[in-house]
Length: 380
Image (cartoon, rainbow, N blue to C red):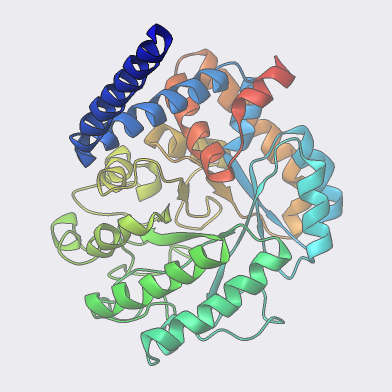
């Protein structure tokens, strides 16, 4: 009888405990649950950042570089890219999937494989089907645009592409057009509408879209690939060119910052060298996004390549993009070694913040879904 009573008391106690837990859980607000989840995520990011601090500096600098890769040169580039821990390749012509696979397998840290596949005149892979230029795409319905983009992105994913430097979200306001055919429209709502379909399709296919050219190239005096160019002042860009970045932030694309000069923002320098421009981009909802420079070999970028890369990192750019010509690929090793030596010396002389570099590498690793703690165990 006594044993039976003890059993009954135990059941009652369990019932009371379950009741208390039920009431407590149901009285916990969604906001409190989100805070708990956020704390866990914050702790995890702090742990990953701690592991990054243990990685070799050469590895971290290498991860912050992306260079051009060409079909007939990539095989010979691979040992160099592996030795320098280069973080990404932008393929400039129809590099085959087997070459991409070999490259990814040859590097200690799998690189980002990027492409310029906007459509129209800027389209590296045409054999998978011709994609309309942005200006022509805007003549379709949003549903049709999504369908065309999804097919293209699905094919790119099969090839091994991880990243696309598209869509262009510039708002056309200059005459002549600085990017003929590459801008959806002079209508803010239309640019946002079709850019959103492009980004949705990329995400569905498993590719990271990179919207460009922040803070807006649609009012530029020219194409920065070929000449120095200036846009309307920031006061005008805020109500027009910067709006798509605000509207599309919830879709979590990455960003490419342009080489244009923006009055009242960049102090006469290209935007890629402007800390104010990078901070503005982050403030729009891109704190965790990877921010790329536009090509540092463009005509709009003055000075030498070492200086260009260093100034972009000093401003807060995560990945410096170097699009060397196919002919100059033979000299790529010398360029990269010079950049890494120059940057290493700058870090040692405290000319650039090591904490900023580590946070930048964390964003890159998060995008790659790479665990730096595993790397730290292997390389320290």
